[in-house]
Image (cartoon, rainbow, N blue to C red; front, side, top):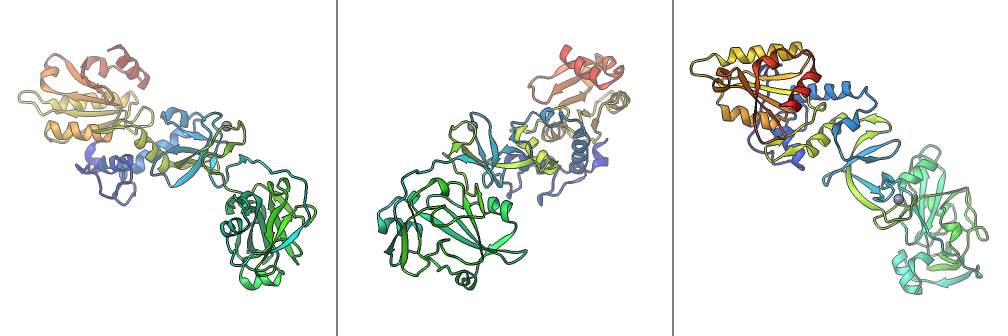
Length: 404
Ligand SMILES: [Zn+2]
């Protein structure tokens, strides 16, 4: 492929909307527009990644520091839009809203239920302060209506925990917050609700609730709560499940070590590759201050070939010879055939980030040589033109480089 045919437009400056260095380099190197749309170079690179993905070891060939589980693979990056829970010890990983963690109940002997006046206690915080009990001694009520059949759903989690709506939806389907009218119709009182004595209600409790005794819950009467409510004795539920959100510092469900939460992007979602995110992950991982440093085989082109216009010799013709030989050996080449200054071409080669750069310049060509530079290395090497033009397949190129 020739530079002109791809219509590559590189840029000197990073776009001012760049949230990450990887995105900035993808725009500067001409893979993406500032609006995050793939250019021709970007589309071709995405197609190349799609082809590679037929190999089961695809992701492991990309040299990315990935984390994940059976269904999903993530790359942690600071600007990632997802929050992921990750255990650094056993590598347990899941989306934060779906992550499980080890919970600790508060087993006690059940005490008799007791109705108490709790004026203006509309939040768990206010209630716990007013009664002088820790938040883990309270039950938090959340009320929803199921979209499919308008079923009223009463959810109970411990007062020190946050409900994960994503987990709830896995058990009951899509829901919306219940209206005041729907809450009152069930027999519950807004702000003072508990599942005790409700009508036509689907009760769903977090699995920590049956392990936590003597919780403060609403009395279903404005201004009052009940002390010492106990699951099993005072109410029961149709569904008992893990419903609460994990957070940094919770104990890993597998090994008990502390979970951390990381920002990330998803590279595989429900067993499907997210190729745009994989391209971003490559750029995020493989770059230096000058541009992308894409590894083989992730790069669309293995070789960036360029010629330096000569005074006596037709360097372009020699570069053409190399171009055709490499192509017939099945090596993917981006041929920068522009009559540009050397500096411009070197900059573009660094930005675009092909694993190898081959330069046909007059001085070396007079000795029958061309310059070869792996993108991640500092020094040029000289290699004979003849050794390049007699390559028979791509592996011979990589063997040749190791031997130089
Ligand atoms: Zn763990």
